View 1: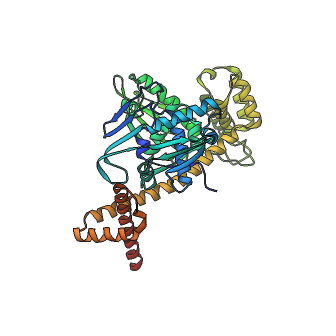
View 2: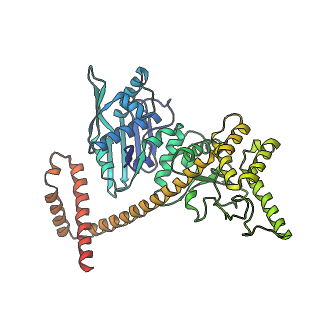
View 3: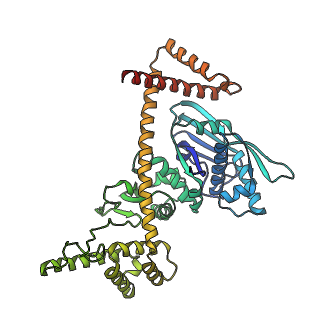
Length: 467
């Protein structure tokens, strides 16, 4: 069954902010990006909850065949965005609508669709109202805003359930940026201060930026289908390059990032699991030393296994939080668990405890080892791998589609004037009534898209005839 919480969003609206981190920004706020994007808020700038409400409105629009006029329940909107229904939050929802109706976006240059604009300006929402005695909101999203997302060739599907779990505004905004930049690659680098301006956050010291980013990444790794490592390369005083990497892309055998780091670099990444090792009936529990394939060991072989035991126990100690590594009671628990259950069993339960423990780490770890609570975490990681495979397949298809589109656009651009007009007239003829009542810029967008469709259809027909 398809996920009903998925929302299509154009990459422009992930790359450039639609909402901001700071609730205290002034009315009449203006934000500019060096690439020609200008954001104007005539009223209060939207923040995280407003971004969630906008996703909800887009979801309802898309569920209703991309309707610009939608009717939503106030209670339903609040619940969908993780807000407790009530009078105060209903008033905040009304304030959200007032914020969006006062937003104007300006672009200069090329949208991801490939259309180049000398100047492009539009709103997010045109109007909204609440009639007595009803409790439903009527709102009209801007037609160009909707059409741009609907016909976008470069977009991502957002899951509203995942977005609302990211409670930290920075985590949600960073997730949007990573979604865009991991579109066709698994590694992305950017200067730390440049990323701070892109988000945007106001911190001017590198240490403050890194501290906040690491906390945001912890939340992203915990609640989303991404597992991201961040490498910091210092290149001058107070300056650093950040490299973000989806570590599920790294190798066939595991998800570990490279261990070799320079003196000037540090790595922030989630814990990762080892692959299962051999389990023979004559061997000890899975992962407990090197499998010999025999029930009896010679003296030299026994020494090798003991050495392996020591190494693997030390690896388990390394998984413990720094403040607990030297505690004898916890080290004894880990070692006993290793002797009884093996490396993989203990490792997954340490990782589970690290993520979910309360104030009493020792007691939580004992219970986790007893009932194998970490098995759920391992299954989640396996599910992530399956999701990654499916995502990789989708991205390959999207990349192939992108290449086809660019080829079609080049073909149209190189047509003679006579052939171009002939193709345009055919597109207009086939669209027919679909152009009725549309504003000129919307009509041109539809005609251009249909011309590309005609060329692509002809290419497929020619290819089929040759075969």
